[in-house]
Amino acid sequence: SEYTKNYMKLPNRLEVVSFISGFALLAFELVAARVLAPTIGSSTYVWTSVIGVIIAALSLGYWVGGQVADTRARATDIIGLLIVTAGTVLLTQLTYLGALRWITEVAADPRLQAVIVSIILFAPTSFLLGALGPYLAKLNVVSLKTSGSRVASLSALNSVGGIVGTFVTGFFLFGYVGSRETFGIIIVLLVAISWVILPRYKPLHRAVVSVFLLAALFIPSPSLPGITDIDTPSSHYQVIDFLYKDQLVRGLTTGPSGVQSAVYKDGGSDPVFWYAQEISRLTVEKNPADILILGGGAFTLPQYLAEQLPRSQIDVVEIDPELEQISTDYFNYNQPSNVQPIFQDARSYISQSSKKYDVIIVDVYGDTSIPFSLITKEYGRAIEDNVAPGGAVIVNIIAGLSGPCKEALGAVDAAYREKLPHAVYAREPGSSERRANFIVSYSRKPIHDTSRPELPRFKGEPYTDNFSPAERLYYNCQTVQ
Image 1: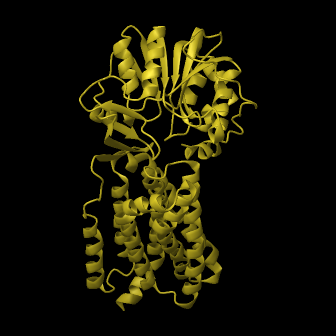
Image 2: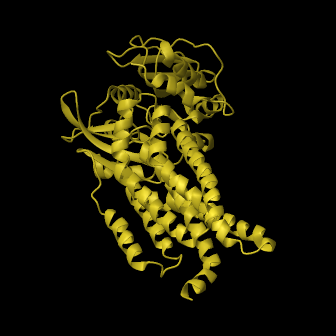
Image 3: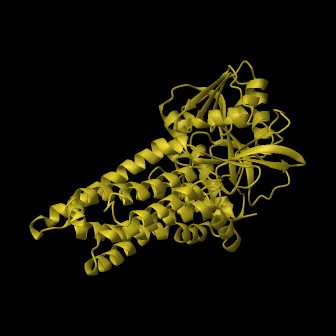
């Protein structure tokens, strides 16, 4: 019969399904973490929650799928599993913005937020993809003599699919399409692969469901007014318009806790935020020949300094090359002739560079936390090698002189003090010493500036590349007002 012929072809088809399901799982996991970034953040805590929930759901799916497959190993069930899985991905795509807004209202702890919303949004799809595996294995085993190789081939192809999904999503999809569109690609793959299994089984019913799922992809994406979401291979950004001190500004964010860069909507080029104003003032006063800026943001600070110091050479190290185009499109950036973008990790650059700078500006933040590699003893020694004689390092630090944020300030400060022992600071006017933007200047020699007090020394040794608990330090500081 026709069904008998189709069942004879199942083994090769099952391997294709295993490959695609592996691709879908890893692509889904990467998008899952990406969609949480604007609302909850992209810290290790968030990644831990996403990965932990997905693995837990997969494990439960394996167990349930195995129990059911032992009682009814039917190829038609695989069709149903693939279609329902595509439906759960669609549901995630349509509801994640609402779920994220809801979770911020009912839970304050970002770790709890990430776990709860991951269970709601990502566990169902992961459970179903886990349940698919035992079904594939049961149907692929035709003899005890070859059971090991049959199961191994499915596992290998599933892993290869996951590898391909990881690289395609991270290196390609995030660079050309957004998170919502990547969800759509996963849905299309799952629907398409469902037709590989017994393609002539109830074709009309399957066609109706498939068309419905694919048509739902064109439902307009819900969005908030004044917010533009941008995905790049490195990060998820939001460009937002808002009022700041009674003036309309445009800002760039990478998470829920702060705006990294901003410009005035009327075209003014002056720095918007106090910390950028203070960094600019200190730098212009020194009139340096060579400036290094670690952290480009929307390139607002480099452009302003280039205007004020046209004879200075300004090197800007930024890990995400897409930010230059974002800055051009949304932040009126027009690269000055004396600005040289260097698209590289900040720590990597200073470890390899032999150039000496009169001023090094450090403003490297992921949301409101500094990467762990930039608060270690080894980092401090590397950056000192890039400071010219008589030069200074100017650092933007979000932390505090007292309370839970004091430990974060002490950790960042300790990284510089071994080689740059003299430090003075300014704190944003009107802010609490428990948590604020601190602009700290470090140098080898005493700094004679009566307008800024010396930064007190903190107890404790600097952290190292081996142990640098940046996540814990900034988590404790995050909710301090």
